[in-house]
Amino acid sequence: QFVLLNVSATDGLYTSYTRVKISILPANLHNPYFEQLVYEVKVNENQLAGRLVTTAKAKDDDFGKYGRVTYKIVSDEMRDIFDVDAETGEITTKTMLDREARRNFEILLMATDGGGRVGFATIRVAVGDENEFSPQFLNSEYHAVIHGNLTKNIVFLRVKAIDLDENQNVAVRYAIYDSENKGVKDVFGINEHNGGIYLKFDADRFENQMFQFFVRAHDSGLPELHSDVPVNVYVMASSETPPLFENKDRNWSIMENAA
Image (cartoon, rainbow, N blue to C red; front, side):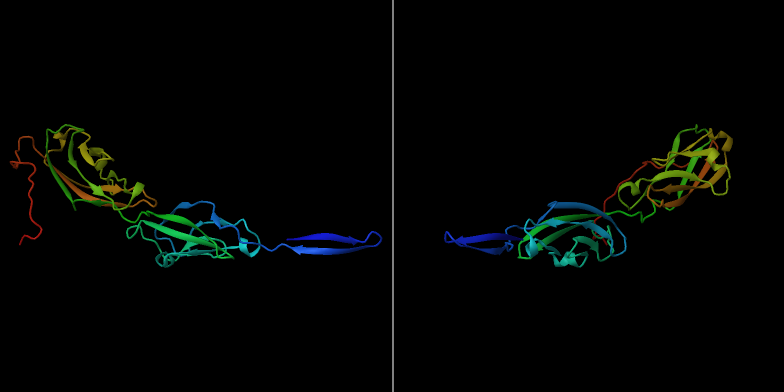
């Protein structure tokens, strides 16, 4: 920060010496700059306020007060949601984030040195999904009537459940749920991926019987969530003829402002 000079003056016969101290004052020659121009981070939803988002560090090639950097979030909107430590650059949440309300945030962070020079970085925050929702079946219950001559491994009914979460949390798998161990799993099987229900044995031995059981849909989140739906299957005699609709599917359209 300083230089010492020894200076001498002579008249050819006599010599005098003195020491000169030169202090080097800092000059503000450089802007602060961040290690990255863009930071991509992820924070899970429903975390308590004060959750660390990331730390964004800036450097300044000056020294002294001009080399000291402070941090500030530029946007008033983002300052209501996030906070930054002015000395360390640590960014934390000020509120609980909800992915269903907003999935992404973009924070413009400013670094300022002692002389007023500034540098900027962008922090993009993706809100991660928490497993909040159980799978929901499209129908509240399912009914099927099958002939006694139905062969095994033929899908006669398909159940469907959806999950309102995101990413891996929406992957639904199905299983026959027999809480009382009535042996339903020995009679019926289900495709765990598409919900197709089938018989494990030919149906003729079960004619005129009603089976009532549950199908469970569970997601792939942590913790795992599930829901159950009742299924009723009646096995009628092969000689019986049930009523049949002329068309299996009918599609109609109606205006939303119709009376």
